[in-house]
Image (cartoon, rainbow, N blue to C red; front, top):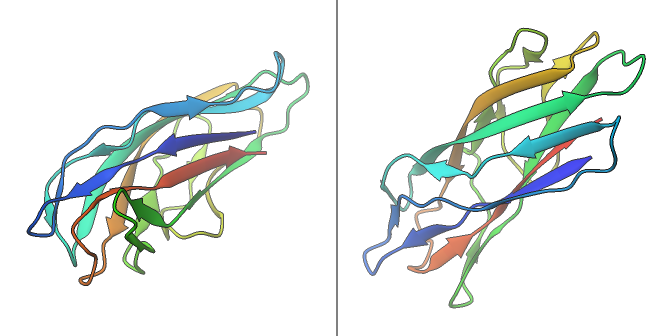
Length: 157
């Protein structure tokens, strides 16, 4: 099961990033299943290009499978694409940190990159877990002024 949050960030003539809120898309397989739903990526503060854009994403994992023995959640990010044809890859300072819940455990802060990385696990049945993740997108110093969007994808299995 995968859910995708589109997370636009913008730059002005002087390359600074502005706070924005994005819409979230959720895909659900069927009832009695394992699913993940996310809220919007909410940018917390303006950050100059060359810095890390901080934000949060609320995540809920629901597991209604009979006899479930737990689950694993991972996350990945795409390149950022601008409305004027510019693009950048989130830099090595990009990060994601899930919170532990009553029935799931965060693995702590991990690098956010294009390859999926595990962010939380439930080692036993966990019908519902909700956390607010801390997310940082590192914007390279040479990023051109533009309005950028990228996708953060959460998967659970």
